[in-house]
Amino acid sequence: MLGCAASTVGRRLEQFGIAARPRGPRPGPERRGRLPIPSCSATWSSELAYAIGLIATDGTLSRDGRHLSLTSKDQDLLESLRSCLRLTNSITLTRNGRGQTYHRLQWSHRVFYDCLLSIGLAPSKSFTLGPVDVPREYFPDFFRGCIDGDGSVRVYTDRYHAAKNSRYVYQRLYVSLVSASRPFLDWIRTEVRRLVGVNGAVETKFAAGRRPIWILRYAKRESLRLLPWMYYAPSVPALARKRATAQLFIAEPGRVCCRSVPAWRSWQTRRTQNPLPARA
Image 1 (cartoon, rainbow, N blue to C red):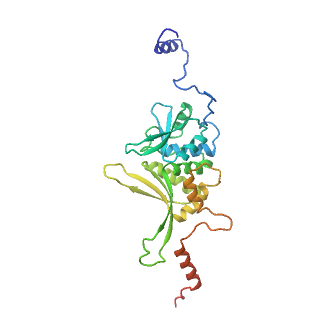
Image 2 (tube, rainbow, N blue to C red):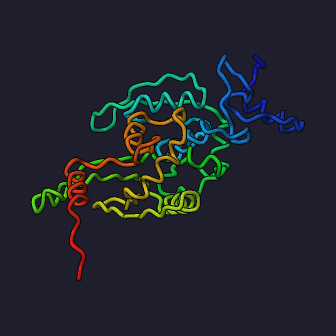
Image 3 (cartoon, rainbow, N blue to C red):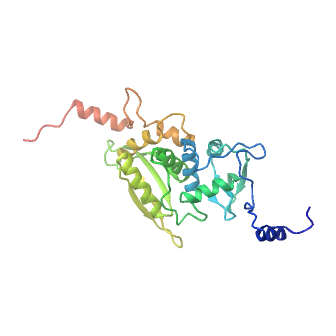
């Protein structure tokens, strides 16, 4: 329109001391009819903390300084993220190198990107991620986002010793978080210990030709304290299948926190009815 290149305009603006905004989307409350994305400078909320937990563990920050994305096999996880950040971008299908199909959400927002950088996130963060500046009152939401992003709430029936005795059947519960950054897991573990009073344990997993991966794991006794803290209200954003597993162990009025398998329950009943004789 001016009959000259953009670089020429930039040099002239610099020559006369006229400030120019960075290239990219114009910052502002609304653009092209989209609702504003919450920024780290705004008031924190459970939705924002949860979204940042997802991005910290399973999201990608592009090196162009404005694009962000998250890929998952769970479409409802991306829908929750889109709702938390009030995005209107489409969720698309993508394939990995092995031909597996995943869902992908990508969006562009320079201000939000810069906010993530300011609290500790960065491009190529998998091996370098450390503490994230999250308000302590929203740490349960951030932690739940981390678990939904790269963690698990696992329940299984342990029958390993059942061949020795039919009573040796147990229901195991683990809450775990996986990361390629040990400092990040150490920070998470410290914060959870301070807020909930559970220690957990960090294990190392090695694979030939790859960097080690660390797993922060909480066993059943500690998980029973952790789950009600994470899922403190039915309305908090969460991955549906992990929430459903957690609900089996979250205390309800007049009920116990855990459920034992029938073999263990019947053994407890027999032990109560026929106590062992006292030692002489």
